[in-house]
Length: 488
Image (spheres, helix red, strand yellow):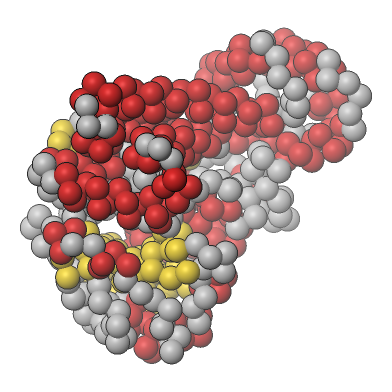
């Protein structure tokens, strides 16, 4: 059968790790989008998924034999405040498959109805947030940033009630793992050391099998998670992405971007940019993301302490050693990325002030982040034969400094160097005002034209396409979208 490769490895864990839940059927499911390339990558039959039986599974109306959904339990710090029991309140794990590269990938429904962890919520999802997550997660994948993926979006034919009635939808999400920092926090909070060990062993076997042979496998596991998160956040920063709500229950230990709520990409560069309406103090602002990531990882280290060593002092040393690697890994990836974005091959001590001066200028001039780097990615600009498009005269001294730095690296082919820059400096990102316009068209008019157009365009974000200049143009003042919402 087309679904026969779906299994449920998480269900082999003890029953206290999850709750068995049946999805709540919906009235009139309609397939908005099916990610056929991803389905093929997962070894699933796209034609079956798009047919009546596949749609019934994706909508939660009827599960094929052997597909037995479950909701996982976890805890988490939300805006710094600890909640000892959260869990999948509106999501069901259908199971996992082995993809074409031999990696295990999990399939989850979001918005499929309430679970025992719903905390009085309706367990549903509105159409707008589903379309946002589908578009942004696929955009992140095309940008080469680790992320959960979107397999399908299904309209339910029902209304969900938030501040106003909204059309309902279900997101079908794929991830290497949905285990979160908060999952470990749950077992630590209940002082369930046996559960911690089972969870850690499962995560190691699934995500970091190379650490299993280490003399201290749990300390090596923590080091691996720290490195993965440091690299992830550095890559976010390089394209101006702001997650919005970096709670510990929104941090996957796989190193994938997960839970796209009030997230967005910056237009005008400013380090203090915030998009979450409820983040009044800027806890999750753009520039704070590395600090918050390390804070979250410190909570993971605290949860893992009973496994890191029998002696408390030794366990603390192992935790501190793992956490100490975060900054070095983050800066290595971030500075390497900045060099690539600016066409620099070698490394010099003056690189960091060169980068920071550019960012300070961008802040001062309210320069568009994406377009600034794209404007620099031209051979004649590199040579100094012409000025970058759209940059004010105040950039002149910095441009002279940058070109001097380029010339110090020798007479490399400027065209080749510019081409390399264009492969890391996108011309298209999912600009927030365009995303919001797309959502309005879908919600108010049932018009998915913009959604599919953006999805197609953002699949190749580094390639300029004729007739698509509107998607590379920053918003006018009246088009600016200051806040986004998670829509839960």
